Length: 205
Image (cartoon, rainbow, N blue to C red):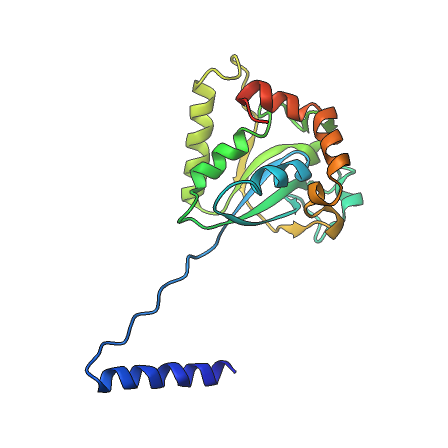
């Protein structure tokens, strides 16, 4: 099938050249980029990033640990070293990496170590997992700016900025959980204290 499409495209180019026309250059598709963050409960992080224009897909999973292909029950013990994390696939022509960092900071409490709101343990630590030097620099710059802003009344920001390792998608029942069980998700988000914190700090509902 692909070979026949290629032949058809070549034939069309040949006709165009024969008629004295320049064949049209193919329009390059926007290359999807990926960014990785850990912000405590990955249900909540997926809910936040799925609302961002330019984000094409998100996947919740595990990264930053020492065990290959861990399952939720293993990660939840805190012994694998993984953090609940999210892979954000995005169109850089519509949303930039610094803009994604801004979404990240506004949906976490970066001053708490190894916990987020009602969830405690290393698996709930916050982190920016960079892929290259440009992402590392952007993350460090945004973190420094946030620290200087005085937003946290002098509390240090303890969010890690570290090189990304293997990312393992979580079980299917965790993917887009906020859609699968919206009532339970909303009770969790409010009951954990996350929703109230974000509203107080940033005015985000």
